[in-house]
Every structure is written in C-alpha cells, then in structure tokens.
Image (cartoon, rainbow, N blue to C red):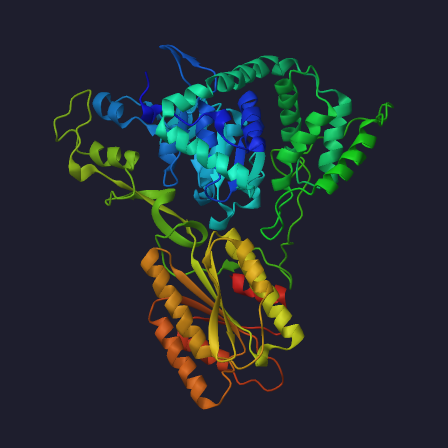
Length: 621
C-alpha cells in the first residue's frame, strides 16, 4: 500500500479548471501537439493538475518490464548537460570507453516533463525542450559525442505572468496555452478548500473516492490514442483551419499544424470518426490566443466575438471548392532556403528594416552594463556562470566540469604516471572547469522627468512613448525594470522593480506631470532602489536610464545638489545613460554635466520622438 507521501491529488478532484484539464488530456492523446503553457496567478492548482496527469498515462513497456509513466520536473537552474545528457564520465575514466549518459529528456520519454516557472528558464534551454517536444527525438552533437534517442513526452510549462513573460518567439513554440484564474464564486472557493483539507486529512481515503473517475479518464486517453490515426481530417475541415488561422493573421504555418493536430485529438477524445467544426473551434480556442500576442503589451486571450466572426468566415471558405484546373507550365522551382528564407516554411515575418542609411542599422552595439556579470539569465549584458555556451576550459571548476579539457590535460601525463591500458589515470590537477559565457538580465531603472519644463504636450508624449518602447526592449532582454518620475518637489517610485510589462504600462498610463524638476531626489531615489535590489539579488547589475532636459529648476543650488546626488549614485557602480531632451535655440547643456557626474553615456537628440529616444538608448552606433 502506498505511503500517504506518495499519494497525489486526484486529477478529477480538482475543482473547475476544465479547460486546463482538457488541454493536458489532448496533449496526452497526441504529444505531437507540442505541450501546454499554463499561465496564471499563484495558488490556482496549476502544479496540482500537472502532477495528477502523470498518474493517468498508460504504463511504459521497457526491456525490464512495465513501469508507470514518470513525471520529470526540470528545475529552473538546470544546465544543458542535465537536460539533454552528456558523456558518461564514469565509463570514460574506468574503461576508456566513449558512452552517453542520458539526461532529463530521456527520463521523461512516454511521461510528463514539467517545467515550473518556465518563463524564468534560460531561453536556450526552452528552445531545446520545445525542439524535442515537437520532433519526438533528441539530437546531441557535442564533446565528440553523436547521439540520438526518442523523447516523446507531454511538455507542460507553468508560469505567473507577474514574474515576467516569455518572448513571443517562445510562446509560439508551445502548442497550446491556457490562462487560469481563481474563481470569485464563494461556493466554488469553499469547495476548493474543503477538498484540499479532506485530502490532507486522509490522502488514501480521498484518492479512493475519485479512483473510478480517474480510471475513466485514463481509459479514455488510451482509447483516444488508439483511434487517433484513423480519425479523418477531410479537405473541408482542413480548409476551415487554414481560413481561421489566416483570419487571425498568425505568423508562419505552425498554428495551422497545431490546430489540425489538436482538432484531430479532440475528435478522437470524443470518440468520433472524423474532425468536425466543434473540434476546430475548441482547437482554435486553445492554440491561437498566445500566437496573436506578438508584443508584450498586447492583451492576452481571444475575444469570443472575434472568434465567432472568424468561424463564420472560415465556414464560408470551407464550403468553397478549390480550382480544379491544372496549372499551365512547369511547377516553380523550390526555394533552396525554404518559404521563409530558411528551413521550416511559412510566410516571411515582417520586422524592422536593416539599412546602412538613416534608418535602423543592423550592426549597432547593444547598450549594456560594462564588464562581465553573473546575474540572472537574460539577453542584455555579458555574463558568466553555470548558464550559457562553453567558451573554453578553465582551472576553476565552479561552473561544471569541462570533460574534454580534463582528458586532454591528463593525456600528456599518462606515460609518466605508468598507464599501460584500460583506465585513464587522473590527478586533481587535471580537472578543468567549463568557462561559460552568455547574457544576463539587468535591473533597468528609468528616471523620467515629468516636470513643467518637460510638460509640453508633444515632448511629454514622446518621452512617455520612449519609456514604453524601452520597457518593450527590457522585456525582450529579460530585464527587471522600475520607473521613477520627477515632478513637483519629490521623486516618486511609480513602478517598483518588476518583470511584468503589463503592470508597467498600466502604471505609466496614469502618469501625472507639471511642477519643478527634483533631479537630486530622483538620483537619490534611484540609488535607494539600486541598494535595496542589490541586497535582494547581489548578482543583478543595475543600469540607470535618465530622460531629462537637465533643468533642475529653482536656481544654482538645485543643480549643485543634483550633481552631488549623481556622484553618490555613480559611486554605487550603477551604469548610466542620460538622454538629453532639451530643445530650443539656447541650450544650457546641464544633461551633459549630469552624465559626466554619473560617469555614464550622454545621448543628445536632434529631434525628440518616441522612436528616436528608444532607438538611441537601445543602441550606440
């Protein structure tokens, strides 16, 4: 009899969350869908439902017999070696034999791979997971090892949007996405608490009450898997899917494939022989919302009215017969680079032009904190640590073992050490660590002048728009951001440090203006934020971006105080950028003086606009 610690909360005992449970079940029926991204506030049973799913999957047959499907949890701090596998060091050292030690992806085969807080996972590891989930196999070419193995699993990532978003490119790679929230209905909340307390009091008895219902779901998954290949997806429904995805203007062809697979899985789940319109609609509700969010400031979700309209248009298109005439002339030559100008197909995506004139320049240098840090994984400044690509071996072993470097270091001493055959003789002096370099996310502190001297309508709109553009850039770089505004006699922290761009935009929408320019208070407030965040996370390096005309109104004394405060901030080691927003024929040049006191970069704009501010602050040519 299993111990109480081994008994999980039953899948069917979870109150509500029907859409989440359906998504998980469909991915269990057809792992090729590509997994589920579960977005929601804390305390909404995200982890509970995912863990309960593994118990419902069919047993796995191995050479040693049958075993239960595994739930493999991938920690946020996992290294690439731990995820995909690496050389088996034991066999190399003991037998001199090159062998592969599988990682977490192999362990998750035929089971569930669960990544909690997937939005905090390093981007390159998310790519590895999603590639494996889509292909059903893992390919390893590294450290002299060439290896491949199957890895068909249900990938589930959970995240709290308040802790930061996934980039749109990674959002698109998840097959389905579900937003979960806690019910505001009192009776529902009471039932949630009641069931949880009953489970904690008697886990075995509680699980027994739901055993038959869980078994019915498990049997339904097995039955749907068995009939999946026989489900018919005819041209009418395929045309409906294509028309629906075109109506929502999603990029590429991945959405069409995911909707098709999900609709087929849902038809099998219903026990139907063919895909119907209801299957396509449910598939669209699960597969399209996150693909429409191309910008971090776009609202998540899918408007029901818009979906109804798109379904009506798709219904008309579905009944249209395609042209039956054969095209004249030979077929066009295929593009060697694929429809997208690269492997994978799909329409080319639009983006900023790359020119060498007055427009955007592709060779600009990203603004970053100087030096090499050790902060949280991101995409702004150089960093070293346990994440990132291996650059070279090093005598320091704190970032993992560099196996090839270790073996090479030992190889030159084998004759002296008396090795004849078999084992390689190692000494502690041979050990080499892996020097890894990647990118880190920074703390970006925006100090925004909202005073009377900046309050002309066009100028203020430009500065506010620039801050929003900068926040968008910070989101893409995986930064933590905060906003301090200068107005009247004080500096106000309108946005405490956060990784949520949604919260940032809402706070900026209520920005008030007017009054004096308390620059000194602004720099002191920025210093306070830097010190406080350094105590919380010493490795996250700060970058202070100040948008001002430099006019600390009130005479000479406020200007002197502003320079003193700037010097205090500089002594804390914060990198700085000052964007000079001063206009007019007569310029005082105070912003340049402040940049010198801060020891940072000074940027002067010929024309103040949101695009110009954002473009220059993001990059220095």
